[in-house]
Length: 162
Image (tube, rainbow, N blue to C red; front, top):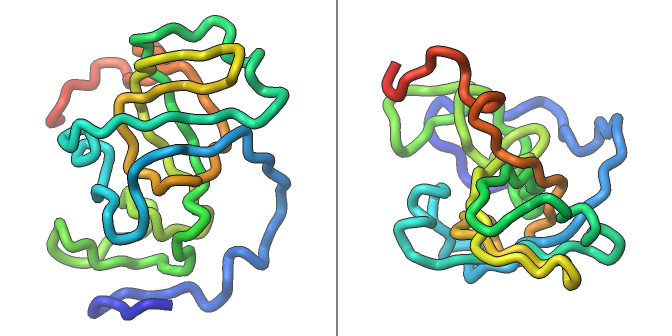
């Protein structure tokens, strides 16, 4: 485990030893990012202008039916090279300590990340989806894809900033 910031608290156990469900990876992210080069979040990734792609594993390409270029999708991915033991963290972008469930940090008991991305190209036959950006490292496993639907994914009456 890497060094801790003041006040951070690690779990007294390894969450990876408490496996209670099985997952299958449907594909992998292909991006220009690696440890030390990745943007800190999806907003920063978009600012780089670097696109990426999702390559589905064999057998999943038929699941792309109904998706279109220009459509937003939610990509759930497994931060497989991340740490997973911090429950209280000291984020660099904020003041004070915050619980893992109040952060988008990749350090979490289940290293599942969510990014809403835009489809920039689509090869249904090959099972390859071009996306506008990602902060995921090259080779990061993809758990699932879901369409972003404003009437479902935006809370009723919600406005930015409050």
